[in-house]
Length: 245
Image (cartoon, rainbow, N blue to C red; front, side, top):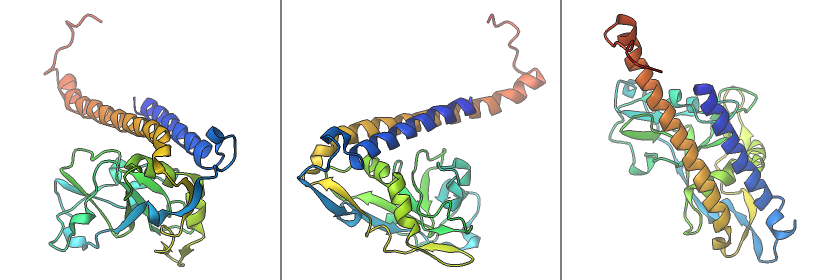
């Protein structure tokens, strides 16, 4: 079941990337050329950036609150739910350092020299049953600040391979790699002066991201059900012999 979910969601993500490339790199809906009313736009014009929470090790304890870290970032791409760390944050936590479903987080630190994770952008696709999610100082939350740019469209823009390539030019450090604070605001791409022209793309990627999240939720529920029922089946507490399949 897990393998099927991964394959389906990988396919949906590939559709998102293909659509974004077609619209924002190849300009296929516009005869392959940048429309005359599109302008080179810094990411800072359409998005705001929020730094993560600086925590102490003593705060990591059993909790209904989880913290997203670079451990949530799969080195092959994707958001790993088992990367969450349970935490009881201090009063220093800012309201802005909470992460909602579909907020996009960008990795600003990498513990390897291959820069596999740094600059990767991942939307929060599931809270994995936790009451609240916050994000660590190793991540930056990117939120849209224009009416016609949704969380979903912004996530798709940041998951484009051009953004990752851009970020690799802003990496510094030796033992631990860090992404310069200039990397995100200085990223530029061509966008229409009237951002509402991106609505068709926005609507499609919104549907696809929501489907991915729904698939994850369904798989999580089925896995929890399996874990709950298996011991009862093994012990004979639950009798299924009368079920006609």
